[in-house]
Length: 117
Image (cartoon, rainbow, N blue to C red; front, top):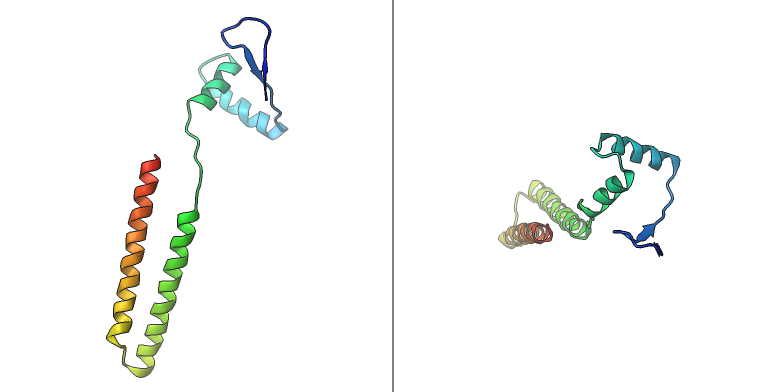
């Protein structure tokens, strides 16, 4: 939570937060590379001028699930073909449709991901 300062400064809000020893060590390591002697400038620059990456793997989980389903279907068809030496054309068309659906889903997911960037 930010605290409003009573004095008039260019920045009149103070933010206080806690760090573990390891976090402080990492902060100091990164600060030592920075071109300024002012730690506040370094922290402000790090927070305000960097990207925050959010990993949303919802689409990835769906994609993995669909690919696993297709893999199961391929295994079943392979077993059937090896056993009976006969695979029906409907089964092959169904498998082709699933592959096409996954390709479409992958393309749409990549397009959505690129829009967010």
